[in-house]
Length: 360
Image 1 (cartoon, rainbow, N blue to C red):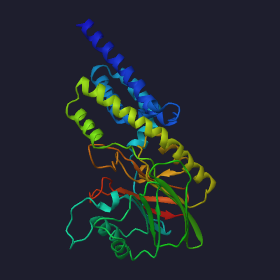
Image 2: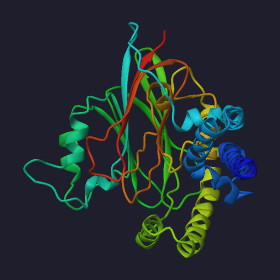
Image 3: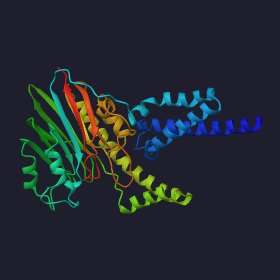
Image 4: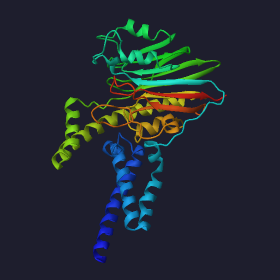
């Protein structure tokens, strides 16, 4: 029996070491250059699975030999920043008398143009935006067409006197609707096939707010790719994982290498336009454990991590459970609340909104 017990502990410890190595590589993958090492930079995609695996090792050691539980616990401590970034336990706060601003970011998938809806009730996304009570709305893939005309947009968002609409390289439109005057809107220069990042300057009282609305390079997964991914989930056999997984992983790695210079350009624009009041938001097409999230968020606060809890998935189709829509705020704001709003599923993304209080 002692030999059996020793064998079990040896096997579990070996497994725990392998999990720990994978977990730490994944946790620190945001520091790997996607241009030089695109495959390794994608390791963050496996973070939730390795997080769960290390947690199960922790539970197993508590049941078998509690002293050994210190090892997976130490692994969690070393990778704690990534654990908190991925699955934070933020808390909501009450305002302290300063001006409160509601910011909403939403990839509308061309304003739900492919969705069927009651014409009398109106377009669900336009209805949502109209009733959002947001002070600033940043939109991606906000391109009129089909059943949605520009006049419908103008009517629905008539309460926003200031707006800027800019087309990306491939025709996809980014838009900003604001109750505050928009002083300027400038595209951030980077190489892209169909995306864009726009830097706005807004006048809020006596202060100027710098706001960057992003739609970074999409992952370019077509219907065939999504079907392959779902086949892997349904039948995780060796052949499916080996062939399909390798194909999808390499395809994502190519896009990560494209997106990294875009993130560098946005980070450069943030550094060059640094001000007390700054907000950066949009569809990053990358998870919280990524080079993109780390580089753009340097010196800023992840609003979701500050005031929300849990993984907070913002993409809602094809079983791709990731938080790829983000909001960052400078220290000039107190983060009061942040929410991934699952009340509407008219797009493949959920809208994300937050309440921010200006510090004087």
